[in-house]
Length: 134
Image (cartoon, rainbow, N blue to C red; front, side, top):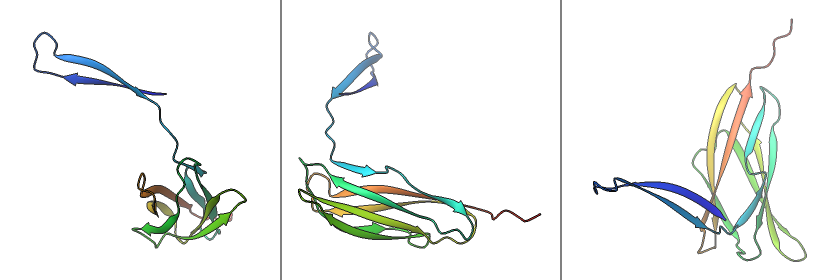
């Protein structure tokens, strides 16, 4: 059960603030392993990472497309994996950034689900300067 407390400001002089607690059960729609995609290394190093996308049994979906605003810092490849009882996906990310610096990008997985037609993934990259030889 998830609980959140909020404060409501009113124009009632007797009750200028009201504190409310909202609680409810949250059902998981998808499992993403790992939850964060981080491509971290030094200049010239090949950096890649694979994310597994596993639809929950109660909410099956298919990934139809991947939308990325910026495509110059990393590439990705989607693979559909059929297991004996369900379909899972893997997305392989590869860093394309050659010079030192940081990037934070977002991709959207377009699904056939009416409940969640888009799933957002954050991709972070940190390319450090190559150490200088003494």
